[in-house]
Image (cartoon, rainbow, N blue to C red; front, side):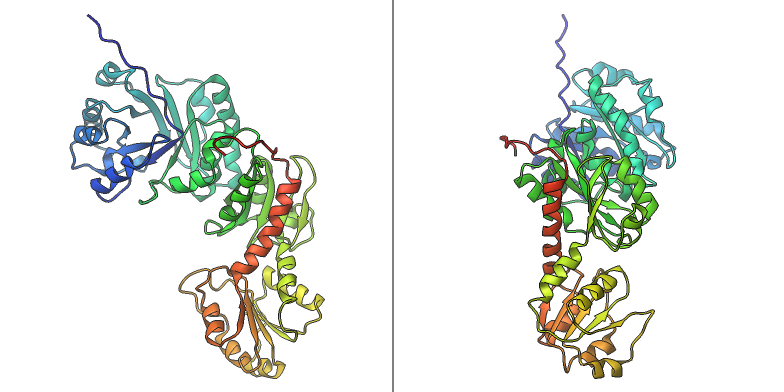
Length: 469
């Protein structure tokens, strides 16, 4: 008499690694995920527990993994026999999926559990190694496959696209992505490029690997619904992972039923950025430091610019400086008169040009061109504009405090570009009773101008609303 084996349960798009400090926290998270996400039970993170008990606590609904230290896990590499024995104890409890390294033979105990237990074959390659095509040419036994590399350059993400498209066309359940901050696009665009699933950090726990995004972020960006027709926009610079851009633009794209997605793109070099624009097929860009001058120049544009867009790949770029537009609009509502401008970088240059175009006298101070407090007092500025990078970090002090003190007798308003509400400069302005134009207000104004251009002029196809929109 033979027993009928159950078919493999398909992997959902989101696999959430349980990285919590305690099993109780991990279990609570796993039970809250819902059917659209599967918990990844990393046995190496809970080495003192009985692996069968962990699987049974999850009702068997999990992907079981036991990761070596050399692949980002905690299990000692020298104890391979112990690791596999621990993994097979979990298999005996009946998980829905188990992760086995790409090059290992399938143990008899795991073979006996199939196909009721799905087999995911995984490999993590060293930085600089890119052997995805060779591995896909000789797939091991398995039901799904995971290849993980490292992003040394932003454009490296684009190298995954042909392999992911091939896998989709062949019906191969593949996830191929790159670790590190520059690998973020490969995680978010996994479904759009042809990948069958991607990994997420729990919303209440740390990331398991560099560049892993929280589940709530992937869901907010609707990464599971992205398709081949989706165009890519983003904010490029370094740092950008803190940017409010994705939270601002993605809801507008979604509300307009526009097939565009907006991501943070970590890159501080203009040549590398220009290469990535083509490798990733980018249609729209918000540009931030340090690229506002250098990237437009690399593309044949006059900077500084903070916005680039094009209708489709191969068409010429169009550029604008919506920072200047937002600043001009804000200045028109403020008391006229001379302005003390703090900062000499790209934002400082943009600010000075707008101030002078508005007919306002400008006294500019920077580390390269210092100004004495007595000069500020004699200049009697009615406004103080903060255009330095100070304020990006919570511990940052106010810029040029001696100049701020000298400006107080005549100052009536203050403005800054850092869009955090709790900067030291903002606190100084509020304490002094000045009218304050916050960085958040300037961000919203310039981002709205960017969004209009992306929605109108980028070729992400408009679509009709659906039940899951």
